[in-house]
Length: 69
Image (cartoon, rainbow, N blue to C red; front, side, top):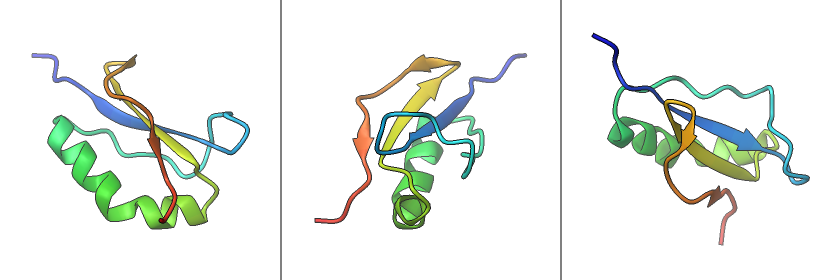
């Protein structure tokens, strides 16, 4: 059985994908969203400005801006 894969792609301020930090691969959308909710501040501190959730390589949700306020 092939399990679905959910992963966050993180972009910098210029819209380029970041090589680091790397999102874990999740088997549920819920787990992926929970992880982002718990780690977005540290991701933003590491240079991530936008997070895009991919489901099996295809966009799954609208992009999420990683900024306080």
